[in-house]
Image (tube, rainbow, N blue to C red; front, side, top):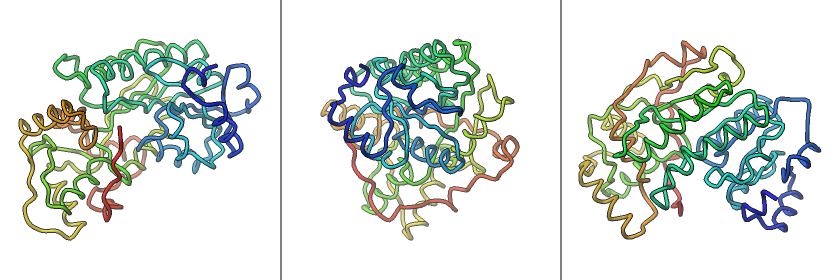
Length: 341
């Protein structure tokens, strides 16, 4: 069984079943839950963007929704929502055939951002995506929506961005109608950038962001991004396209820092390490097996984040005005929880 290969305890399955989940353990058993609707599979559903997308899908009445879940502890954030769970992962490919059975649309948000080894980026972001779309094609999936980065690069110096580039090619060459969404920097409750900035500003500590103060960002709110994803899913105009999305503001990194400081009511300078020093901290952290703080991939992203897009693109394509960063910074009054991954 896929859930056994994914390391899921049978007793755990009984527990989550009692809590209202519908467990997908094989393609045959999955048919018991078949409904006359367009089933959606979401990978990366327990992540920052995934949690917000699930809420938006539920609010819009888009069901049934199935989530590909890798680690058992992640399902706690999905509790009590009547979701289908399929156990498996992209890195090993286990459970993918079961996950895509009976699915109309796959929304792939899964990404390796904090690698445990040199090959993790490729295993998830490239080869894992390849496995997912191959399974989707075999199952007759009609649409794939893939969230990626605007700064993909086929350059061995940047292993994260290179892995994302490989995943993009896997999507485009598979044959299933696709849309690739490239949002740049995403902010909102639970994000990395603004909450980490707020923590360092409150404690007057140096943040090794590896970014120039004149770095140009175009942040988009996570709920606006979710709204765009749902619109893309339902509109054939966006098939076989790559969409660069961004918010209405093009801000320097210093302006982002200033917006967070203003939200916190803080004044005075905020120290940033240079790009070179921040990279040294990242290398040292890796050598010392420190797995908290800034993910290594973010250094690559911030090194390439000067690419912006039309600030009116969301309004032009989707007919609504996305939120401004300064008007929408939320939940910065407490330090973000430390995670182990």
